[in-house]
Image 1 (cartoon, one colour):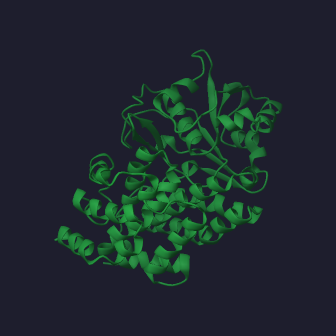
Image 2: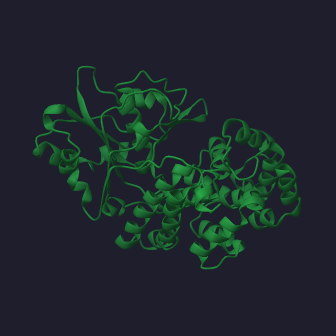
Image 3: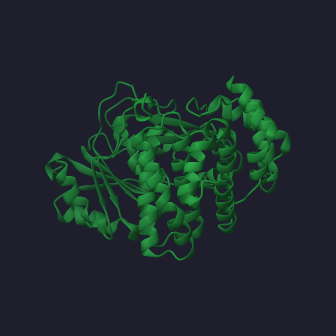
Length: 403
């Protein structure tokens, strides 16, 4: 059987319209009209990050909408990681008819906006998550205008909420934005720390999707294109913030978002479990976890990992890939060990159990169990990514798990 024929048969969802380029965010009104949203259909609900609202960065967009005849309802700003309470607070009064939802901001604002659209027409339990086969009806169309480059939320059918110290995942085709405006100008003032965290989140999406057993030719093509962009654009955006580098990170994050049709693997489970205990930004813990995820996947994925290394490092040597991740993280001031975060070594077993029980990844190429994850966390505690990769005992444990 040919290699392509043996790949999973899975749907690949994506936005219907994408506009990318300088000042593309000024096209909000004509893009809404292009998908059939007219001023007479109702108001445009704008969901934005609280900083965006406080600084009035949404003013030009709302003004252009009003000039085109639309009535605009600006919700309260989204602060931090969204929760069920966040989504409920964004809902307009029941007598306000919403024709479309425009999301402006980072991943938190985009995720919240997606769920606002769904909740407007469905009685969702925001504490329980959502599965792709759930019987819901489509809400008002969503337009996503990201102001960071990392989460890829503008490209996906996924939204995440924090509830009871854990992530709740909502996945459904109706959560995919209908229109995306990728404007590198909106990224020009991003702080270095946000550039680093967002960029590594995108790198993690691309790499982990290539390791996933759900990968398809479409997800692999998107992931490899994302890595070819992010390998140069992320360091350049961190160093200089040039428009070219911002353009590269915006497009790279979007492509990595498309790759998420294959889903992420163990790296994101580790990242969630560590972030819930340290309060670090998600992208920071993704960067910390990524080398250890590669080590865990090694027994079943050496060819895929070599493929990734060739794109990022122009060499099929996986150790160069791990060194690239570590070197970039170090110079972007991302922690390299759990010890320096003040995590208690005695807590590692609970973190391992958290990964396995609360963030299972059946699509990870190697079975995940608490003992093997604990072995990784011991290395992660001491900041030993290369040792994790080379470790014969971890490889042996994984190989035995496969038989």
